Image (cartoon, rainbow, N blue to C red):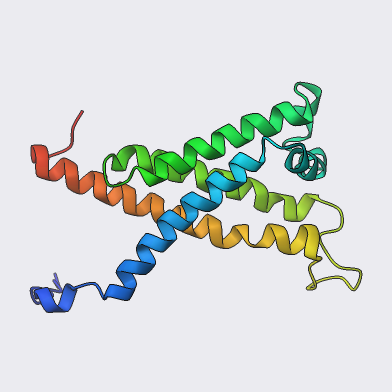
Length: 173
């Protein structure tokens, strides 16, 4: 059987460039700011009203307004977003909890990306590939945010696994 081996990594060969370190922190804590800010805005009538057509046209979420009010749902969603942001920020202390927050972020952004396909007016009058400013381009940015949340999820899971290996020599039960 052919076994491919790699030479041992040297400290200089594996050192992270300072810009990569800065970028990593900016991705994580920029994501935290964006999610928390958007979550806090969900408590305003302005934001609750703005998301109402997105929710109402979604085949997955449209039933929600028969159970709770527009403002009530926005507040629940805002609370979930703020919790996700706080958990993502907790990565240095609690990587496993941070992974939960990141998974919440991935789900939140996947949900909003689904609105690209269900909300009327996403495409401009000239049609595909031209997105309208609202809601099209507004929703498209969530593709990058979903990627950032997915990256923070992987980073947090890696840190949690490394921490488990350091503490107990194996997985905790």
